[in-house]
Image (cartoon, rainbow, N blue to C red; front, side, top):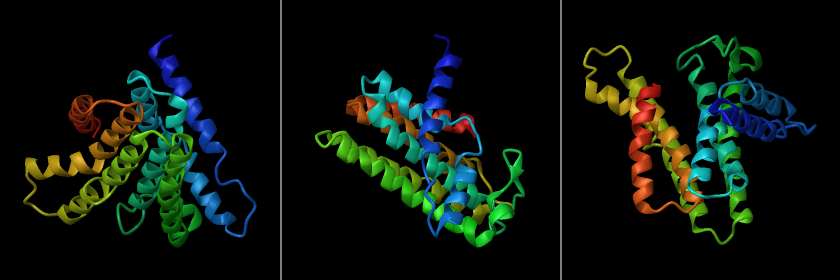
Length: 219
């Protein structure tokens, strides 16, 4: 099978899973609509694909990694919604269509991002029930939260915002921003898949180092 076909299979698996979410007819349906609007707006699904692939190559069951893969895509989507807000990048378009706050309003966009982040953790937590005896599940959860948080994506975004318009940007600071803002979640995606499959500490270290460079290249 060609690599592009493997990618297409992974994308379909992730898309099919995501399409089942937030479809209930509930009083907060507008929130669900805003969440689905951005979550299903397209994209290559690179991060969840990396989770599934690294789980596979390390000898794990990709099906059991799917909740984490979907969770990582939710984290990524929430970050895009918030990045587009007027208080951040103030973008009108994302992936060829109006950004979330342009369609649903700023307050609803903030809440949609918040909800996606919270539901990401709720989704990842389902892996505990699927594999109660797998110690890698707890470690994978810790990796996800760390790579998305103050020592990862959010931390990098904060330094990026603080540095905007300032003349003292150095290569070291720029690398720091990119390694946290962009690389961290890619590292998390690769590591989560590997850890769920039982990768050794040595394998995890190699994957994390490689992923960091991949993230910089991606940026």
